[in-house]
Amino acid sequence: MKTPEGRQCLRQLTVEPPYLLVGYAIALSEAPFHDLLLRRICWEMSGIPCHWCDAIPCHRTVEDEVLPKAANLLMASKLIEAIIPAVVSSLAGAWSDRAGSRKPLIIIPLTGYVLKFALLAVFMSIPTLPVECFLISSLPLAFSGGWTTFAGAVISVIGDETGEDGSQRTSRLGLLPAFYFMGFLPGSLSSSVTLNTLGNTGVFLLASGACFLALLIALCTVSGTYATSTGDEGRHESGLVKDVLQTLLKKRSNGQKIYLILSILSNGSSTMVSNGESNLYYMHGRKEFGWEIIDFILYRSVTNGLQMMGAIFAVSILSHKMKIADAPLAIFSYLGSSVGSIIMAFASTTWMMYCGSAISLLQGAASPVMRSIMSRSVPHDELGRAFTLSTSFEALAPVAAQPLYTYLFRKTLISFPGAFFMLSSVMFSLALMFSCIIHGTHKWHSRSERKSLLPREDSTSKLPD
Image (cartoon, rainbow, N blue to C red; front, top):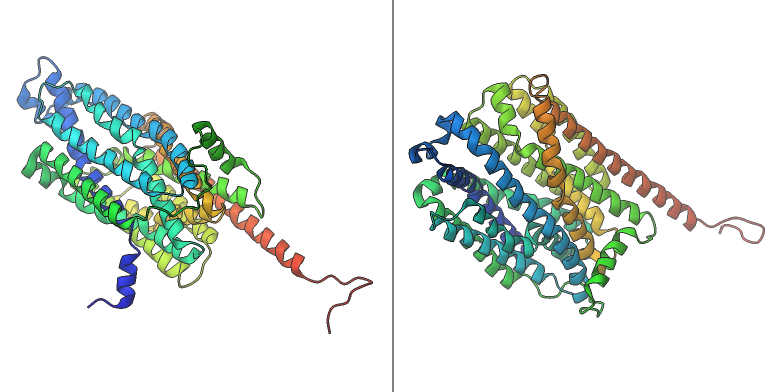
């Protein structure tokens, strides 16, 4: 039987279930989509037997021909789903603050996900369709705002629902990655089984169904009005752009402008690391340690699990119980992540990779902590602009990170294959420096405020007896 406290906690989960379901759909479809792309490209090439295309890893010469085109198409898809949503998200965040509603910023991107996976399922039923047409499936998601707008709206809703309760806000933001992982892990582990059972069409229909369920849940649980309306719902688009820039550049008291800018930069730095490393883990592990696919899946599952536990530990114990402030939590997180990256750079055995991941335990707590700082740096009616500005900046990180990390990996493949982990350490060190500045600035302003409250002794006034 559920306790009243348990029922109250469940009622607070408004945006977390849709967040979990989207994570499941993304993980479920990712590997099958890559596999489908490789085989479709292979089928379109003349002179290659079809049965070779169904077993590409066994034919290295065919794989060498297919991979470059697949990489270009994947990059094009990522650019479509990054650049357009970055613009849409910034304008949508400003609109939501003015209109007094976050709900459309959740409903519309979820509709985009439903359409994307449904289109992929339809395209699968047309064997003669050119592989470039698969990029069309990215357009509904991109113009709906995609993950950038959806994540920004989810964070804004949590900020609205927690109000002035900073501890509860940090807790819910800290647990948000855990919800995503709870959807992502089952989707990832079951993708190959689902593919073998249902085929590519079935996988994409299942992913579309999961997003449709997320859409229905959001319609029922997310309130229509959270933000404070300013009465300018119909303001021109140029006014929205001005609002976004003003949110970042306007003068603020007590160092809040510094907190906002540095927290956005910190999240951007850590996002560059996660995006830059994502395509290199397997190649590095295969070259250095002879990893097979199962070794890679095990390592990534353990790593993501550690980060989930680290995020839960940070918000439930360090923040909620021990009352450690957000900036020191971010400092611990980035320091551990930087040291962990150095260990992985010089790792000579698989267990050293696990050791580096264990030291980076609190890495998953950094982003929600920084967003908590962000939420306290702006007035309540600017939350949407601040969060979508941050997620837009993070959405553009892959555009710079993936070419940079790939270039470094290729140049150091023979001499120092783990060099890209050193780049990650540098990025985490930058975020660490930003966190230290936030912490130092906060301490300085706190001391200044305390001094200003002390009574002054002069010729006309004395301290009370």
